[in-house]
Image 1 (cartoon, rainbow, N blue to C red):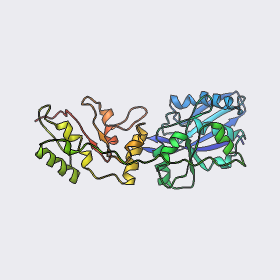
Image 2: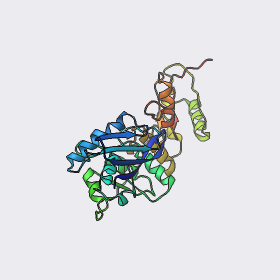
Image 3: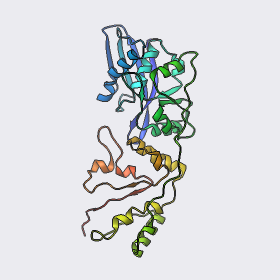
Image 4: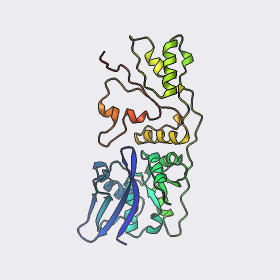
Length: 310
C-alpha cells in the first residue's frame, strides 16, 4: 500500500479539532513534503521522523517521493504532536505495520531522534474532544501525556514509551499497548481563608455576597489596606468544583502547558501583572494560547492596580 491514513488532533484555541494525516509514497525524485497549513515546528518533523525511524532499525523509504497532507488544509497546525502520526503513516504506507489496526487509534506525540516518545500539551483537551465526538477509537499518547488524558472517563487511553513499542503492537498478531492509569487525584489543598484576616468586617461581607451570587467585586483604597489579601481569599469561599468543571478547568491549563494534578479540583486564582498585554489577558499569539481570562475559568480573575477613572 502506498497510501496510509492516520488520525490525530490539532489544538485550535480551546478546542482539539480532528486532523487526518495522509501519507503517500510515489516514484520520482526523493523528497519529503508536508502540506496542510503546517508551521515550522511541524515541517521540522521530517528530520525527527527520518532519524527516529533509522535509529530504531526501521526502514525509511529514502528512494520515494513522500507527501504528507494534514487535513483540513485551512486549520493551522503547530508543535511536535504530529511526529508520531507521520512516522506511523510512513510505516503503514511502506507495509511495515498493519494499517487496519492503526485505524483504530487517534494518536499524538513528539519523537526524539532515538525514537522515544515525548509528552505533548493538550492531552486532556484531546480526550474531552474525543468523548464529545463519540466513536470507538482509542487514544494513543506518550506515557506522561496519557496519564493526564486518562482522567477523562469514557475514553480508552493507551500509552507507549518508544516508537518500537507502538510498531510491535500494530503488527497483525501484536499485543495491545498497556492502558494508561489516571494520575492520582489527591484531596485539594486548603486555600487561603478569611480567618487569616483580622477586622475588615465590611469587605469580608462583600466577598461573601460576591461569592454567593457570582458577582464581580471592585475594591478601592490606598496601598497596604489589604485589598490583595482579601481578593486572594475569594476562591476559598466558592463551592468545590464538580467533576465536569474540574476537567474543563484542567483542560484549559493543559492547553497552556500549566496542568498540575496537585491543583486538581481547586478554583483557579489568576493574578496577572498590571502591565500585562491584551493578548496575555484574552489569549492569542502564534501559536494561539489561552489568556488569563480563560485560565481563570470557574475561578477568580484578580486584576490588581486596575486603572479606573473616577
